[in-house]
Each structure stands twice: as C-alpha cells, then as structure tokens.
Image (cartoon, one colour):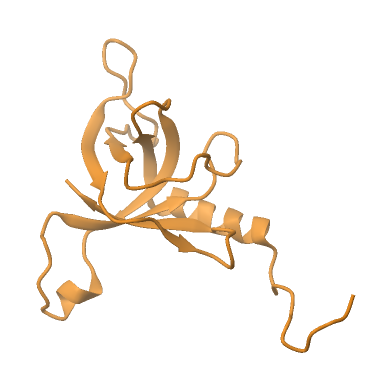
Length: 140
C-alpha cells in the first residue's frame, strides 16, 4: 500500500483518549439519564457548564441555556453510547447523595432534578467519526 506524505496516524490511542475524557467528565460532572421516546433510558456521565464565553464578552444569551459535555462511554459498561445522543433526547439530571449515587424515590426510581432539552445538533469532539465526547446546548 503506498504511503502518503500527508497521512500520519493519530498520535494517540482513541480508546485511551476516550477513557481520559470519560474520567474527567465523571470527576467534574454527575450521573444523568438520556431519555428518548421509544427507547429505554440510558445512563450517561454529563458535565453541565453554567456560562459561555459569549456571556463573558457581554453578548446576549438566553439565560436558561447551558452547555453540556456527555461522555462517549456508558458509565456502567465503558462501551460507546448507542444510539448516539441527538436533539430528540432529553437529559435528566438527578438528585444525588453525598457519595454521588442517585437518590431513589419511594418506588425505587432515581429522583429527577431537572429535565433539559437538547436543542442543538450534537457536536462531536474527536478525530474523524470517532467521538471522544459529545457537546450540546440544553435549555431548562
């Protein structure tokens, strides 16, 4: 196979980079649920940011909009999130106890904190079509 002077392999392993981002999002974020009609709920690791650089520069922004990073890996299995998140999903943040686990209601279901609508198409972060994590804008 001929080699191209323009082609260089990725200088890092995709799985190792996914694990790094997953660990960062787990450390600074929380467990959450992605819910889409017709699919079972999916556990995810998500980190919500309260501001954007545009707000810091004095530009207008809807105050209920927030940015969210969602790990590309499932928190329980470490496998890639399937199906990929989309604007059809709702991100449900949970009431968590002191050790980071979800607080259950009397029926044994996790207590919901907020329901956030993913209102923009997913932003892939990563090389090619292999995402390291997902970027979204959400609205409460």
